[in-house]
Amino acid sequence: VQLQASGGGLVQAGDSLRLSCAASTRTFGAYGMGWFRQAPGKEREFVAAYSRIGSVTRYSDSVKGRFTISRDNVKNTVYLQMNSLNPEDTAVYYCAADAQALPFTPTTASRDYDYWGQGTLVTVSS
Image (tube, rainbow, N blue to C red; front, top):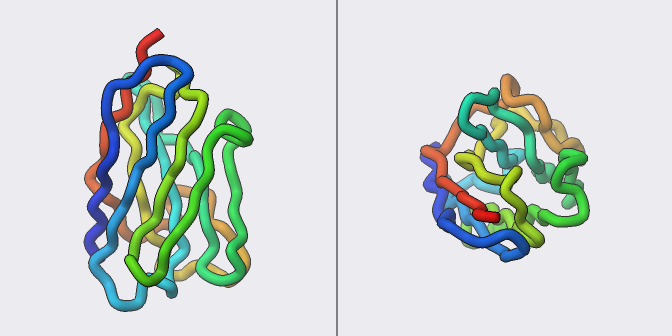
């Protein structure tokens, strides 16, 4: 499975962005999907996840209420709508696919993901 992330860019604090991640698979619905980010000098951290069945989502505390993950199983794409961005959100954002995901269970641990996109840079200026 190949994942292609897009939508990053330079924005000001308070702005919004929507990231997209297109997957090259005909069985997209079988994967749990997630977004992670890595800021300069920091470890990769969980942002959001969407279960493969049941439309269950999970968010990190730092983005809860501001970010929304969604998926379109017809377009084989997962999205991350990011609102009220602040400079602490500056990072490279990665999408990931979990081939072993349990139904109704968003995957939050990076070690459980099997496929990763190349990352898209989001920079939020103050």
